[in-house]
Amino acid sequence: MGQTSEEWRADLERSAIGVYSQGGEDGVLLRLFEKIGVRHRSFVEFGAWDGEHLSNTANLRLNHGWSGLLMEGSDRADGELVRRELVDAENVEALFDRYDVARDFDLLSIDIDGNDYWVWHTIARYAPRVVLVEYNIFFLAETAKTIAYDPDHGWDREHYGLYHGASLAAFHKLARSKGYALVYTEPYCPNAIFVRESELPVDVELPTLAEWTRWNWREEDYVEPTPRPGGRWVEV
Image (tube, rainbow, N blue to C red):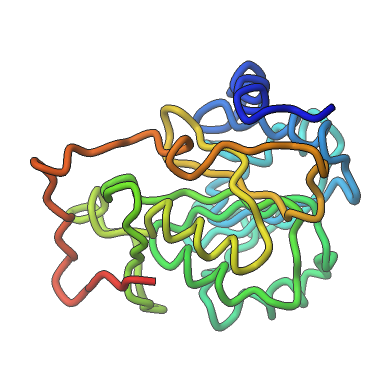
């Protein structure tokens, strides 16, 4: 007999341990791969900073025998462990080709504070089994919006807290169109994990998007975040 949605959620939340990750993603990923199995012990992560700080893959690489591709667009990349690459929707699959990424690699971690939605949207020839994304918390639960695509978008200190990435509902909608299910959101950090539906146990019941929404803004007080000058939100 499979797990109920309450059991699934409690199981992953109990497993949360932060070794290198921002929240408990390190422990959650280990438990998740216990559930669905590991195929290649392979990952791709961008932006990866120095390969350790707030990394979602460092624990797997350093403590569990995984390997993969780390990319970072800033000078935090050392060019060896972490490749100095600015990932966008035009080049993401070419980069995967260049670095010989397996078509069905185990884990993709996306955190580039900008075109995250559009990069995942573009990926078609590769089908990572698990996708972890950072999302923008400053939207109502059912609002599916992302920043407008801009290949030159960079980290913006002044507007970072507002104009970046995409809402959880936007990623959820994109994931479903690609055959992925939302299996976890971190309680304290804006990270969500999706798994290809074909990889999940057939008898599992998952919590709904509403149940995975950790930030519920009061509609009567809510003000949608203002785009930075020249930017705009796109409903998807």
